[in-house]
Image 1 (cartoon, helix red, strand yellow):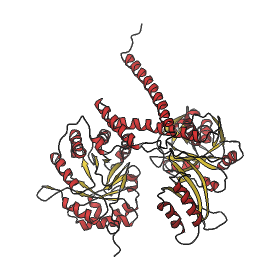
Image 2 (cartoon, rainbow, N blue to C red):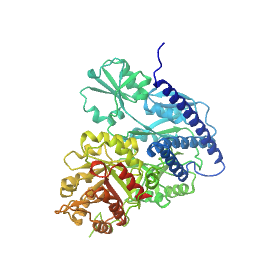
Image 3 (tube, one colour):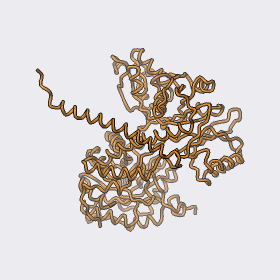
Image 4 (cartoon, rainbow, N blue to C red):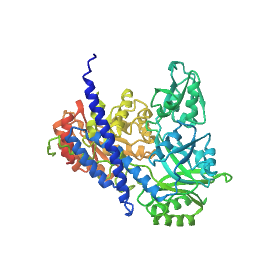
Length: 632
C-alpha cells in the first residue's frame, strides 16, 4: 500500500478553499446585479468612485491585518470591481434595449481563434447571450453580412496601441448605414505558435496578419525566414498547423484551438499591446443615463483657416471631453478631410444635443455614427495616505516671447501623468527604488507599491530593463530608468514610463535634443555647480523639441569638504520661475536625515521626492516609517 505524500492533504484543503472562493464570487456577482436593479428607477451612475475608494481602503487595511500585501488586495479587488461594473452596465443596456434577439449572430474577421473572435466572445459573455459565429474573410464582408441581415452584429478592430488606427475600417464607416452600438478593448499578447513536433530551430515560414506583422516588426526583423501575410490570425494558425517548419503569430488562447504550442511570448513592439474593437448593427441603441456613454461623430468642416478649431471649441465650451480625433481623406475631393470624433457624452444629454445643433451650423457635413456604452473601467487608485497608513508600521513623526518653461508662458504648474496619478497637481508624490544599485527589483517594487509610492525607479542596464518593466506591470506602478546618454534612448523608453537624465546631461545639447524628441516624461537633474538658470535653459531645449513633460530635480551634492548639501532655496527659486514640477532628491543624505529633509522639501512646496532604497539609501523598515510619517 503506497503511503500518501504529506502535501496531498494540504492540496485538498487548497482545492476546497478555491471552490469556496468561486462560489462566493458567483454570489457577489449576483448581488452586484441586485444593486443595478435597485438603481433602475433612480438615475445614479453605475460606478460610485467614492464608495469604491472607501471600500478598497478598508479592504487593504483588513488585508494587512491578515498579513496580505496591500497591492495584492487592491489588484484582486480591481478585477472584481471591473467585472461588477461591466455586468451592471450590460444589464442596464439590455433593459433599455429589450428587442435584442435571444441568439446573436456575430460577423467577425477570420475564424475561431482570431483576435476578433476572442473580442466577440469577451463582449457577449458579459451579456449571457449565446453566439452564432460567422467568420468573414474581409472587413467589407463583415459590413455586408450585417447590412444584408445575415448577422446581427459586426465586430471591427479600429485601433491598436502599437500600429495605430486601422484605416480600412474608418473608410468603410464613411459609407455605411450601420450604427456603432458597442466597444470592447482586448489585450493582444502576441506569441509565436508552432505545431506539436516542430523544431524551433528549423523555422522557414512565419504566417501573420498584416496588422500583427506591423505590431511585431522588431521581432520579425531578427528572423531570416519567409514572412507570409494572411487574411486573419485564424488563417495563420490553421496554416501553421499543417505546414511543416512554419509558425504563426497569434494569441495563446487562439493557438490552443488549433493544437499549437507557444514557443515564444511577448514579441510585440510595445509591452502593452491592446486593440479597440467596435460593434456595429442595423439599429442604434439607447444608453441609459446610469451608464457612461461615448458618441462617435463623422464631420467635414470648411476649408477656411480655423474651421476645425472652431468646431472643436463647441465641445470645449460645453465641457464635452473628446477622446479621439482621426482624419481620413474624402474620396473624390483631393486634399479634403473627413474627421472622426469620439466624445465622452450621451447622445440624449442636453450638452450633446446643444453641441450637435452648433456643429450643424459650423460644418459642411455631420453624422452621428453611434452612441454606445463606454467599456473602459479605470482602476480606482488609492491615494498615498491610504496606502501609507499601514497598521504594521509603528508611527514615527517627520521633521520676449516668454520661455516655454516660464510662469508667463503657463501660470499653473504643469500636471504630468505618472500612471494613475499626476505630479504637479498639488499632491506630493514619492518616486523610489534602488536606482543604479544592484538590488532585487521585485522585492523593492512590492515595497514601493505597498507603502504608497507613485513610481518605481531602476537603473539603465539593458539586462535589467525588461525585468524593471515586468515588475512595474506586476505591482501596477509606472517605472523610471536612469539614462546617462551612453546607451540608446529608444532602448530605454521601450521599457520604461519615465526617464531620469543623469545630472551631466544638462551640459550635452545632443542628449537634450534626444530627450526633447522622446514621448516619455523626463526628470532633469541639476548637476553640481550648475546654476538654476542653466538648468532652466536645458529644460527649454527639451521643451522646444516638442516634449512638454519635463520635471526638474534638485539633487543633494557633496561639497569639497565632503559635507552633503541640499539647496531647498533653489526649489523655491525654481517654483517661482517655472510651471514645471520640481522634485527633490536628497540622495547624499544619511538615512536618519532623510525623513527631516523630505518634510523640509514638502514645506518648500516641492511636488515630490525621489528616494534611494536599499544599499544606497533607506532599508525596507525605514522606507515604511518615512512614508507613514509623510502621508498619515
